[in-house]
Length: 598
Ligand code: S6P
Image 1 (cartoon, rainbow, N blue to C red):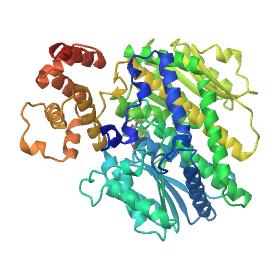
Image 2 (cartoon, protein in one colour):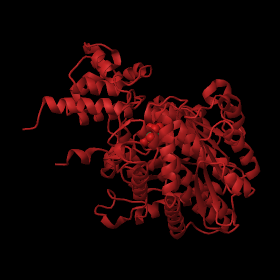
Image 3 (cartoon, rainbow, N blue to C red):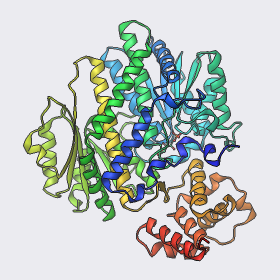
Image 4 (cartoon, rainbow, N blue to C red):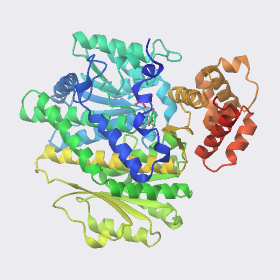
């Protein structure tokens, strides 16, 4: 019989390396993230059953990526009539957007028509703020796919769902499967097929696993369907697929499309060696980035101090690195239950640089203010000593402009840091460097002036920035006490996946059966001690709607279970400690005292 842990999807497993994440110092934390990120590039040497242990460098993965690139090449031969659609929810959708944007630019640079497009659950505003609930809606997914492909002849659709779980993507894949004459469907994720989500999608005909199974069986005999699901190891922060899942998504997609474009430009077939070489170059990014571990740890420390003192983190980025920063900031509310103002990103050129379908959406509210000018107008005048401002730029950006901006900020706050990417030939002016209290300077080997190499360089810098900012925002929330061991306990339960995760966390830390945990969770959601039969049996979507307006629901349920007390009492106990982790540790200690081990 399979052990219980074997039934948990890889993307939801606790990484054994990071059990002590919550008590790690900034440099230990960076070391742990370095080790976890390296797992993305693990080799197939421990492989037993081919499919169950497929890794990024595994032969079958490289073959699959080559095959998908060959399909992409076919589409790219006629970009006016065809389309490549990348789609996903949350981080997966944001990366779909970023990758589509980059490759459209590459096409335009080569004098061709752009043919990449993206779909993200929740629409363009989900690129900036989290809209997790739409992940649960398969019909919305297919409807949006229909809209962007209406007038297209042939479509390569890549549905990204790290956990092989998002119903939004299932709806789209189902639609592609129904029309193999037009659609080639690729499912990209990081779990084995056997661990795809099996729960039936509310109000729909199938589970995600059933759709994934159909993709897989069709992939055996045709080239209209592919299942691309290498394993990249568990996340450093349990379930936080924005981290490794997101990085691996970026690596896989960019490798596939770079291989396709290279073959197209050279008029040859896509080669597996091109795919392999590209993957190797991404592996080298890991080395180059983490060679800066001491300065990344300094940055993590500074960001942690800010959040501990109720200060804010402000990312000010240039070019696509600014978009990477925007993505990192947008993930903090759903991941850490953070306030939208805790971590904010501002982009040089604002909506013009972002280039989304809906254009400038800043009229939707203050959280959609995005440009450096918005920062100067709305944030700078109220900057405090507890805030940290991080400038993110490259040796290709205008150093004079960066310096002027840095000086303006410096006049208000000493806590200004920088993440800078430059080739070994590019030098930062001393007067610019001296403005930053902390600087993560990533130095890259000089590359050829070939167009493809230029794009690859930018992709590398983006990934490197992603790793550094993921470390900064995760480390800062760890310092704030949001994490217990390697579990985020104060998660915002905004969709079914997160509802399930919340139940798993309660079971793990309280040792109570699922039924009791569900009861406690419902008591906290509805703030009552008596849960009616009707509420117990209601669809999870109803509970999620109620949770949207509540704070600290999971920690409250955990305290109620650990201390065997009412919701009101649990809320009181939680409020006695400023840090959630301390409050829960205290309850765990109390319980140990009550039930000593004999
Ligand atoms: C995870 C992130 C989420 C996920 C989203 C999609 O750290 O906060 O927004 O990206 O839930 O997940 P998946 O498994 O479908 O890619």
